[in-house]
Image (cartoon, rainbow, N blue to C red):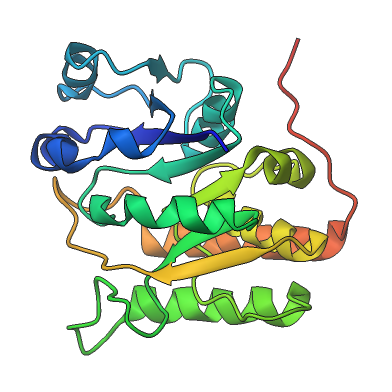
Length: 238
């Protein structure tokens, strides 16, 4: 199995500077970066390291970055990694065994036993609790076989090309991850998780604002209820 690594960046120079040398590219067969139009030095940093780089032009956002990554690689599966400090590059070695065991999707979970969520040391864990609510909604509605998936939203995940083609994902922005888990449930695909340590973000606050992002997830959940299995791929234009 040929496995690729897709770095997803948007103004992540602080995270790249701190983490790039810890990314074990030798663990994968292909590598590339998809950037949302950074202006902070991210693009020169990546170009200097001769990493195949694709800059989003007409369409922005994380959902489109996922689609571009699959268009630009011949790998049988892609691992999506954001060098923002939240995602631990040491976990990259944990994806291949699970993919090669036949799982269609592998998720680094911040919620399962043995994992660490960025908010675990706080008394009020609003983002974690919100994520857990969306986890329960998706599992209760569509997951018809064990195991219960504890982190339906985390973007630190791997997806096989075969699963990607079947899911026909058209979600925009951060919705793409939640939509991919929901559609994997609908199709009865095999999902595996492993516990991960979510560290503090490097370089300022997350671009995923809690309330707007939560509302988009709710809208996405309701849309998936309405369409059932009647989904098709995104319109790529002429």
